[in-house]
Image 1 (tube, rainbow, N blue to C red):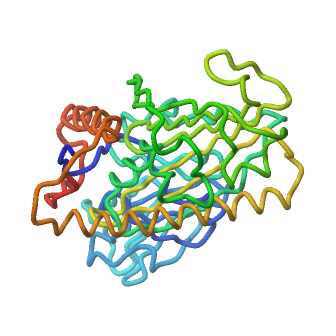
Image 2 (cartoon, rainbow, N blue to C red):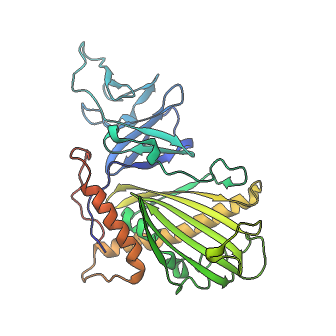
Image 3 (tube, one colour):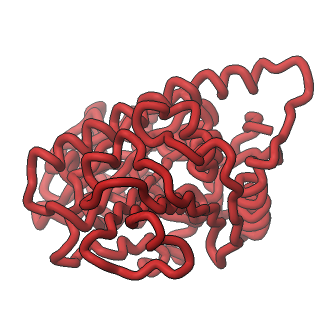
Length: 357
């Protein structure tokens, strides 16, 4: 497994759900940097360095004044651009009194923060949720969990359809998930690992959701975009109707899961997710059950990945790669190339800690 250090800075990362940030300061940590989030009086999100330049007290311990934020130690106050606009204890505002301001966007109920050079921030590079405004699809409210693991172990997991056969026996696992070969495709902005499993019973998580009886043709579509956005598409068609010749019909069940992995530091990540489906869009009970089932499955992932993180840090012998690691290895190579191509100065902080090999 390719060893990597540091993070891709010129990219959007999810810092929070939109609903969690209002007129009170909210502290977050992304890529090893402390960030404070809040909203202006007009409701626009703001993201600033969470450290007053005087004594480095987190600004998140202060208070919001209008559209600005006031340090809770000596009252230095900073506007949305990070410029100090008030220093109550003296007549002149120090010219060096400034904090970093990060571009931030409110999309899909999530707050995305650009961690690199603000001049390179592009709205077009925020992942597009294909059916976000489609009347025939239902978007869940979303959920998240902290994970005591380097973010690349989560990325690897989301490029590995085979793990469901063992980690998710009671949910996503099912016949064919242990041995059916994978197809790997390199994309302009990531890697796709996929496979069709034909004429197999739907697994426990999906069996109550499909609109037909009997066996199914099942697609596992595991796509990862740089630096850490996963798109999983699950398709179930009646046996004999799936595969390359798949045709849309009312019996074809589709679910798209969007996964946003945010590195906190070298040892911690936050895992955000949203889910779309094309059936029963007004069934609130079903939506709750799907959300609970997904949460339970991802808790299984968390237990495994936290143990993997510790095991790989403490290993005394060389690691072994399997054929199933091919998609993850391709992704890491592409990510490493993009990190190497970042302009000097893009990274405000460069980590020297080791990451997974």
